[in-house]
Amino acid sequence: MDKKKMTAAMSAVMSYIQTEEEAAVCMAGRGVMPVAEEKPCVPEAPLKLWGISGRQAIMQMRNLMQMRALR
Picture 1 (cartoon, rainbow, N blue to C red):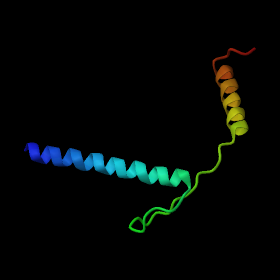
Picture 2: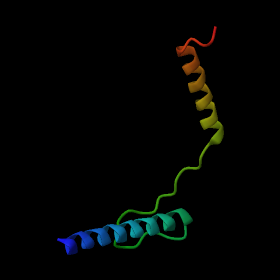
Picture 3: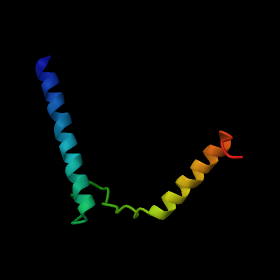
C-alpha cells in the first residue's frame, strides 16, 4: 500500500514539474512544445490596462448606485 501511495505521489510531482516547464517554454516564446504534444504554444493577448481600469470604474459606480450611495 505504501509503495502505491509513493508511486502516485512521485507521478503527480513529475507531472506538475513537466507542466510547469512547458508553461515556462511557452511564456518565454523560445520555441514550440515538444512534438509529442499536439497543442501549439499560443501567445496570450497583451493586457489592456486602460480597458481594465475603465471597466472596473464602471462596475464600482454601478455597485454604488445599487447600494443607493449616490444621490
